[in-house]
Image (cartoon, rainbow, N blue to C red; front, side, top):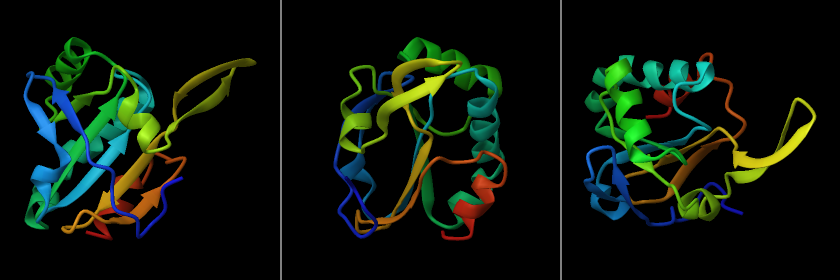
Length: 150
């Protein structure tokens, strides 16, 4: 299980445009790596739009945002375009990165058990170390909480 102070596991994933995103390429910048359950759902949309709306401040603080879910790149592209998202959405279709970061977990909803992403944000510092882990994120006020630590 990852904890604050650990080195963030490196990864390579495709974004909505088929570009290869390598976490290591962002050394020297702070990274807000947020895992969300699914494109176009109310909570996930609200969270993504809050990051979008805070992007100017995020960039001023020399940070970047990367969103990750198990949706395919076509779904991500529609989601990005519909809500004019201004940061990469990464396609973890094989669930490899979600498992590496410990956010692919058993969940329950409406009496049904299944595996899915637990809404979690990792704040990774300029040296690639995990500065803060936000578990079981409540969307309301989350981006402000992240900004307070950038």
